Amino acid sequence: MAKGYVIAHFKFKNLDAFMAGYGAKIDGVISQFGGKFLVRGGNVPYAEEDTADFDVIVEFPDIAAAKACMESDAYGEIKAARTENTTGQFMLVEGV
Image (cartoon, rainbow, N blue to C red):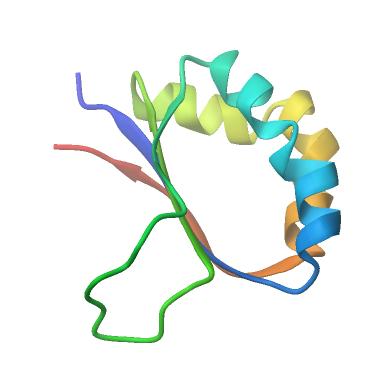
């Protein structure tokens, strides 16, 4: 079965509010669904477009687990801290 991934590229509007409301809590949320961070921030040595302030790739056992996480009450409780304090892309992708 193909793994599921959350891929995000953020620019921060308010880093402190993001970290307090989302960054400090997201590990506990994704772990409930078997998720683990593969990329969290990091150096971007090459980019063909604008770069983000922060890049994330989270791996889940499958796309259903990734979707369940993003639709969970636990994620819903912290989502506004991300959407209100960042701009950028956020997506679920199924692996091959």
